[in-house]
Length: 238
Ligand SMILES: [Zn+2]
Image 1 (cartoon, protein in one colour):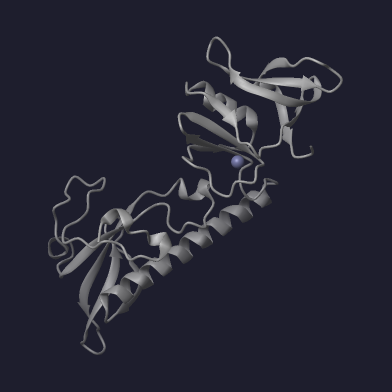
Image 2 (cartoon, rainbow, N blue to C red):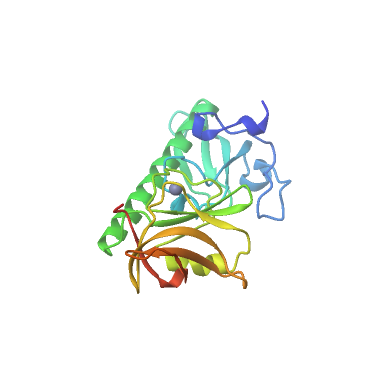
């Protein structure tokens, strides 16, 4: 099977290799016998697994290498398979099984459980700090432009690049990245600025490349050009 179509989030098992896969480690040609002293194979779990976690969480995960090792059950003396992490503390992941595929599945289940629990703890801590469970502003990258998602309906953001609590922080980030930018089509356009309420009618960069918004304030016919730092809030009310 081609590695490209191994999708752990679709329930596929990862591709197994006889030597340690290419990671941050300078030595990738080592076997399980050399690393662990017993026979085994290696597999990689992407940071995007499982797919139901918020992207500001999976954004912090990198691809991780695990080994599925042929060991002996200490009680029965029968052969079994045990999954351990390779680059960390070699902790066991999931439960040992007589079948290799069952041991790998158990490890994936255990990792998904651990990461979901972590995501729930982060959400809970955010709410404790009077923040929404997930950040309000997410930035993605799609077909040559940054897309800024604010309070929008997108469950996943294509090309997820950064996240912020406030639009002005996203503006600072965009100042350091020169590609065009726009708002997601489902982001609300109603804004509160230092000059009062209004509606975003356009997004672009000024002659210095600084991201700016066109805001038509309530009661005015023509839009005013404003820096993103002048937008105090983007609100969901139409
Ligand atoms: Zn969106």
